[in-house]
Image (cartoon, rainbow, N blue to C red; front, top):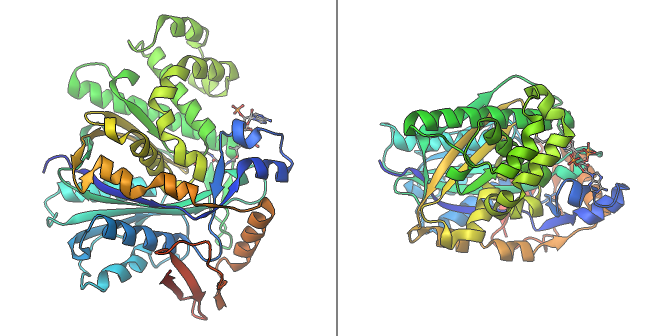
Length: 448
Ligand code: ACO
């Protein structure tokens, strides 16, 4: 099987959002802290009518319709999510409603969970299945769906919500270079959800940033080693056209790319210019532990990597800045932003992807892109996703109203015997919504 990878994509995010500038003022934070400090513009959130199940019903239905895929043609369905609604029943089983109607119950796969990494695990499962001898010739379908909400405090502006669906098969315009994957997995308590009565995580913000950067370094090292072994030449930033990062907030993405640049400098890669070498020289003797805490290094490396960041990373940042951290969907929403911005010039390009899930699990992997053939072409994917229109038609909600919504959801979390508001004016036609949770905790959805 040749060029196994992503044939088609669609994305859904709630039409309700709060502006970071307004939230900043509302929270009494210094002006610029969320917008410049974190690098975020806006944040989507679910109202009581939506959740990770409704969003995934919406995005899967939309993908099948818009690409003209017969539901009987799906042979594997994998979901990545870290938003717990039920400790046993998978989100995948809710999605089976779409397929059962068409008589297709022969679909492998369940949910994968580890913080923001579950979507990548789901994607690898589908790609591996298509590449394996248990493949039955049908498509794989991957769904990443999450609602990221934090307790009041410094982490709250780093929330977000979205669902992404990706169709997997051979001869894909977005093909995996499966031989180069580099992973790093470890046991840490940087972000976790031990309190089953609350949707909110326990988070050590500073530790999570350091863990992310350490995982990035380790994955890059493994990725480079594999590339170099197989290709017989050094890998550096100049061997890839775009870098896509899991995006909790944009500032961390800026720091991450600068960190890769610093790695290239330490490895004496050809891509680092003379001026940059001079600027980074004072930091070459730092121990790796020291290097994560050194603010001058952070500034210097961001400065020397700035021009390359603008070319190789900036086109991937639109949705993560506008929608916020979408957990499992974040990395793929960043990739969707690249397709949206550059679909007509991506033929032959190599894309590096970095997936991170706290706790922690992480992988760096790469895609090789081709224009593809309708309906599985990059330009059609951009048309179907219709990102500009989806962003434009959103409704700005006041910070007061946002906070109130989260309070209601806190109260509802894990609850039963309630119906949601009948006012669904803000949802666009075709959107699935939660109608009620009955006295046996069973959830009922409908399509607007
Ligand atoms: N103008 C411009 N910049 C400002 C301003 C201002 N007025 N005020 C602060 N800043 C800058 C800071 O200098 C800092 O930037 P720097 O790191 O480049 O110096 C940035 O804004 C953030 O300020 P901090 O004081 O570091 O922010 P705080 O500690 O309050 O919270 C954090 C940030 C830790 C990211 C928090 O939002 C959080 O815990 N989020 C959840 C955890 C997370 O997302 N971790 C990432 C990986 S794990 C995952 O994906 C869930």
